[in-house]
Length: 343
Image (tube, rainbow, N blue to C red; front, top):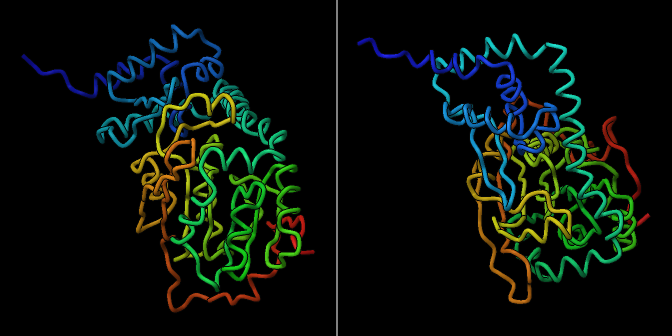
């Protein structure tokens, strides 16, 4: 009896156009069944049936996050024949008119994710410090910053909120560039940092930072990633603005099952594991990655935190131009400065 060739199973899995559309969507991000239904404009039973076929053939993987289940394309698990087949199928489908509609609907779905956090921040600036202290305690950030501080650095506080971390960093570093997309949060940060001359406040999203390439010696994403629809994109953007050899410090929630935080505070993610953070940091070009659970604050009512640190790969060789500190002060074309906190 002639054994069935594995490629035939792959062909069978991709034979339906809906499954190819699903893979194109899941190639770049994780999506729930409900989000896929919205993008594809198909009933849940149909989407679930096709996902099961793809999962059975190892084309997709699922990840539970609280009460939600996120699907993504399992590219790393595909055998070489499946990868070659997918490239052929992808080239046929990616440029079609139908996929243009799918991509536009996907953008709307991801925008809705972001809006949950933005709606919360638009009303929470006045209470944010009390809410955060109640959730994680008042000194956890200082414990995390011990992994980072150098008095000669220019540091980016990405997603600065009310400026809590910037205020702690400012006395310890040469310059802080604090970025947030929420007007009320920046207003609160401006008030907190009044008179602090080495902090600049800039308006912008962590996925598209108003900072020049290689401008930072280090960057901090402090309790930001769980509010971001696409944390991997924010980490990749941090890699762009941190110089080769510079550090990124991420402080966030360890995996938990507090569904109330999603509903009440606009959390998009219910914490991050060491494997998840390491994968994203590696993909963005960070090396020497370390993930460390932080000591729990007895007064905190929220989940345990972690600190993840990585150094951007690709240190400059002897022939590369070394930028001096004054050059980094120049506001480039990508930088939209709101104000200096002390100005």
